Length: 264
Image 1: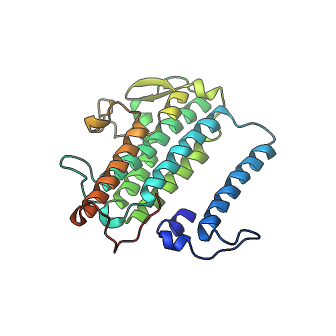
Image 2 (image 1 turned 90 degrees about the horizontal axis):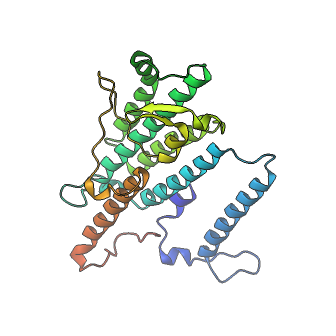
Image 3 (image 1 turned 45 degrees about the horizontal axis):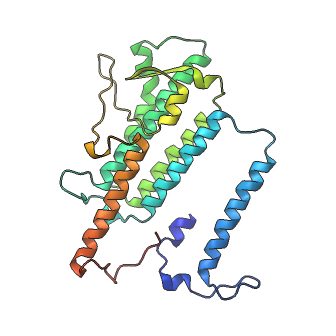
């Protein structure tokens, strides 16, 4: 919420008068600095107040949360009118990148939760295809509803959609024990520890075909050297940067002064 309310502030806006105790010359920008300070201090106090240390899964999810924050920073500077502009021929528009990423978030939850629920029910082996398909239905339905809404959604609605699945992932995977991290989960690559799935992030989750193998989603070759989550973030950044450069081009590389300047 703070980012959304302040991302459009210009340099002149941040210089507006704002006073706090002896700090009466720095202007509104100092309020932003102090807010950042208070949030960091709150994190320290909350960590100190914990009666027990976070589990390994919770620490992994904290890393996942950092990636999410990076992504929201990218989307905070995007505009709805830029979502369908391809940064270059043959590359994905920002909307398509977001649809792909959002689908992967639901697929990630699906793979982990099915494995967890199976193990907690005392079933150790790989689920039969019929059981896998049945367990997948609610995750697939939720994914399709979410990704469909992005087809014509604004950038604000896209941010909200990511927040919804991100919070769900944190809540539904936060109770994984250290021992459960080593248990197998199943996907197109075969049985892999749940720990691996948690760290992988961004694994695409296309629907199972009748033969029981998942078709891998298309990934542009320019990103294949990076981890999946990093690939998506790089695409989103490139989309934003190239669209911004195109807007600036008619003015000889300068940003249009009629457009509000944005905090980077």
